[in-house]
Image (tube, rainbow, N blue to C red):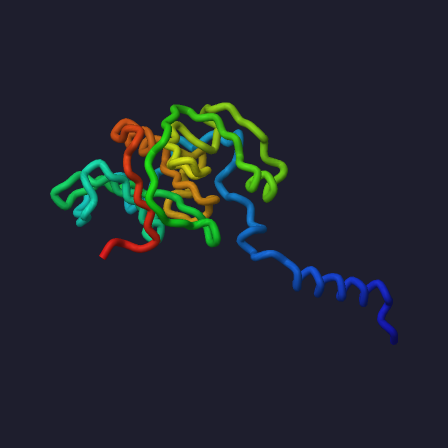
Length: 197
């Protein structure tokens, strides 16, 4: 029995699509960027992701922010081998980065304008969303240099401790408000993939 032509064409087309497809991480939606979703006030952050004072050796000056993407933690150096540690959500595969920046701007209940690259991946996203409880940027944002990256809150507290964002670092709203009040514009931010030796 002969196979119908359309089945053969479909198989050829599927093979071609597989051959020219872009990396899988570029096709994945940005989880946690859910405009309009109001954060669940009853959500309890697991103990390992809650803000706490920890022993932390660093050569960086007190007041420096160190982001350890592999650990999913943000440290605010306190001096005397101590740091405030916050659980964070980080960039997913293909969206992680490292570098040295400064906080260039701070905003309370920031507006959200998804960058063109995000709109290209998710054309259904709004082009602009005013700040507020349903905004994926959460209660506060600290902008990193002239990049599109930020340290910000979230309306998805369940994403803390995961690697699902487009490169920004997210904290639960209570933690981002605490951090926001502790650091001024100009604060040094060190983003590392691996811990300092």
